[in-house]
Image (cartoon, rainbow over all chains, first blue to last red; front, side, top):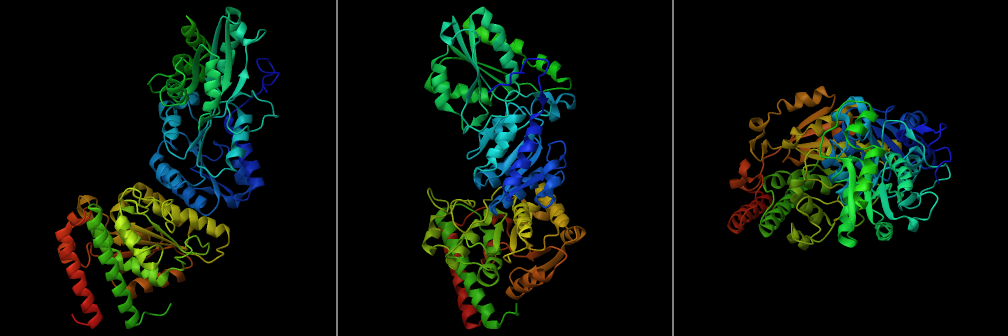
Length: 328
Length: 288
């Protein structure tokens, strides 16, 4: 499933928002009920290809995130599948209640696309770095939450949610990130899947077995971390959990039973997001050690992505430390 | 749409009084809820459901139906009572208002009750939904012929989302959206002009390029005529400012903002029903 060129000099990079743009275009070609709305960020959130191809099914609403939610809700009530996009900080950041009442409570199939999520947005600073969005969206009944790890997965998830009857939140990132999955990747129904098992030996041969569960492009850091630990006798299996809600609990339980501990990794506050979802489930059903990699109750700030990953403890090095803390 | 005859006006007036009685009874039974707004809008709702709308209460999901979006969901009692009297469900169900397990939630829940087009309660959301619906209607070349009625309170126009929606309504010039603002001049904390002044509301709306009609919201001829005019406006969306008396029909409730957000107790309910019933006699027998 992983590209052979991964971790080589030929590694391909593409932002998840690019994958979304392609997926939306594909979905629009497949189904003329797919429509799109954007709050003055059309090129940035990669809706421009859809706009060019389907000008009558694209609605530029200006900087009206709250009203945009209502428009999308009304469109869905008429039998359409609206994708509404802005930066995650503004939608679902600013229009959370409108999403809750007019989309989720109405239970209509609006797809909320939050772009530029995470601190990786970089220089724009804390006001534009959505690091609470997974938390606020996964708390809403009826809402599904998706966090693609790369452009391929973003395209596949976009095509998938265009066919479902549920409200959904799709989290995207701005920066280019490694394309990890091959084009053969298809939607598996929201199941978590193992992305990488320890090299050279079978898992049981390791003195320590740790599972890393991640979502979003940051999983690349987790893969790097896992690679570096095999030589120390720590077998790290990396799992991608692209659907944070509903959580694939069947997999989680099975997986956790084979591990001594679980480390979650996400570019989000460490509370409220994937790490919380995993810890909540395991605390009730299979209490084992869980450590979360995420932002520790702080705002972001301006800087380059790598500087910010370093500052907020999101690099492979930090993930290694967390893994070691579990087997110490 | 021809002008209403005296007989038609009398029939609508009687219907509205039935609906007001139901509103009082259901609020007394529930023990909580809003009184002034529902009574004030009873005539507009009666005109809509018994004269204006193209709808089939027995088949609430009929595709050709006109859509009614209640934006200020707290006046749900008038919506429920009117729907029941129009035949969407039995009048006896009205007494379940706000009860556990009821389809008549304290604020409307679209999924709970067939015939509701939207959930509402948090203010300012209705118009944007009407716009979304009308945009899809335009995508389908307005076939079948449908209208999208958005009913708003005046207090809720405080909300920023409403002004976003006004901008969008002007951008898309959706003449199939007919907005009706209940201009009863009260909100929870007092008179609208004290809490957050709206005037001149008409000038503001006209500045958005809307076709604005001011009516007496208790005059059936006015209501029906205004909607007819709205339908003939092919360039500008229409906003109807319906001047109403909050608590209309029950003298002690009329014009008093304290009745915005509370329900009558049993005694107050008796007084209200007595006055409404005596009014019925006057309507029927032409006394004054």
